[in-house]
Length: 269
Image 1 (tube, helix red, strand yellow):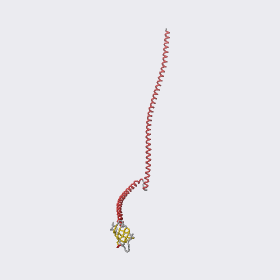
Image 2: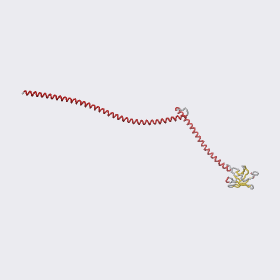
Image 3: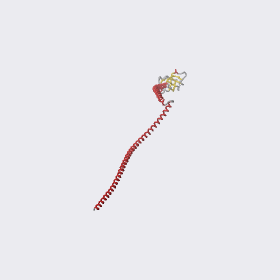
Image 4: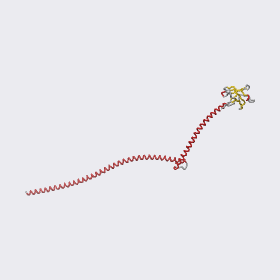
């Protein structure tokens, strides 16, 4: 019985030892697994932390990149605005340059004109003396203007005098014409158309239409020489009958048709 008990005890002890050994082996294996798991977890945690750190760094880089992109976008917009402004400035500068070129061309033309004017003004005139020369010209101009005004005043006076003189001349001319007409009437020559020496009268081919009147004394002339006097006794419009003044008749002279009769006394003018 004891032997069985010992055997059982040995078996129990062996079983316990085996169980203990078996449990110890399992514990060691589990411990190793646990340590491996812990190590793996530690590695995973480290990797996760590293990944998180990397992700954080990438996020920071992405954020920085976004900020740079936004900054670059703003810079590009600013550059575009600046480019547009520069384009406008360039266009304005081109316009200003064109205007300056035109002004320069006008200035060059003005310089040429000034040089021409100075050349016309005579030698020795320069830009430094031009103002003085212009003042001198202005003074001469004023003097000549005053002289011109004086001459114009004199001319106006002379014109008025001339007009008055012309009026007087017209009046005198008219008077002379009228006087000449009267003198012409007084110097009318008429032809003796018939002579009756025995009865002492003759007929003159002019009458009242020619200005003869009963009071008109007539002279008879031949070849421009007076040879007798006659007195109108009957006057008709176109002929006059006059008595011969034999006392005025030159000796040996006989009146005949063709002699000229003129007024003895011209009318007073």
